[in-house]
Length: 321
Image (cartoon, rainbow, N blue to C red; front, side, top):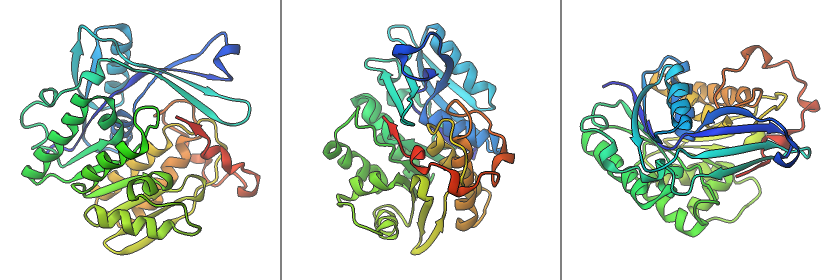
C-alpha cells in the first residue's frame, strides 16, 4: 500500500479583494478540490499521489509545479489539444466570495480511465474522489466510476466528498451520480445542503444528526456533514460526534472544506478516534479560512485568539460557486 490516491482538475487561480471590474491586479495561484486535499495530506505527513490532466501551457506548468512543491507525488497527463482551466475568485465588499470558472473543454475535462495507470488504484491505501470530477464530462465521470470499481475489486477503501457544483450539474442529475458513488464509499463528506440534496430531503430545523445518520446508511457506516460556521457532525457506525466551529477571522473561506477532509483522512489513517478526527478537521477547516489561497499553510497560532462573539460567522458560508 502506497498511500492516498486522488485525481481531478486543478486550475490556475486568479484572486483579488474586490470585484474584478475594479481591480488592476490579481494574485496568481492554483486550486482544485482534489489537489487541495492531496496537499493537506502531504502537509500532515501522509504519502499521497495526485493525477492531473493539464494543457501544455504555462498554466499547466504552474499547476504541476505548485502541487509537487508541497510534497505530493504528481502523475501528470499533458494534453496538447486543450488548455488548463482557469478560475477567478473575488472577495466582494458584502463579505461574499464569488468564484467564476473558465473550464469548459479544458484538458481536465478530457480525463479518461486510461489516465490512471494499471496498479495505481490497486496499490493505494485509500482512494479519494469528488462530485466535481463526476460533473466535468462523460469521460471524467467514467473515470471516477472505473476507479471506484477498481478500488472495490482490490479491497481499497473509498472516500467521497460530494462537492456539488450547481454551475456544472443540476440537482436532480447530480443526486443520481452522487448516490451511486456514495453507496460504494467507506466515508462520505458533504455540506448540510449537499447531504439534503443526496438524500432528497427538505430542510428541517435541528436535522443535522439525522442527516449524518441517513447519509452514513447510504454509504458504508460513516458520514461527515460539514455545517460551516456551525461546525460539523459525524455519524460513525451509528454513533454521533459533534464539533463546534473554531472561531477565526475569515480572510478567504474557499478551500476550507478540502482542508477539513484532508485533516479527517489523515487522522483516520493514523488510527485516531472519530472524535479526534473531527476535532482535527474542524480546526483545519477554520485555519484554512485565515489565509489567501486554497491550500497555503496557515498560522496555527491564531486558533483561540478570536472572541467568538466578535466573528461574523456568516462569512464562512457565503461562497457563490
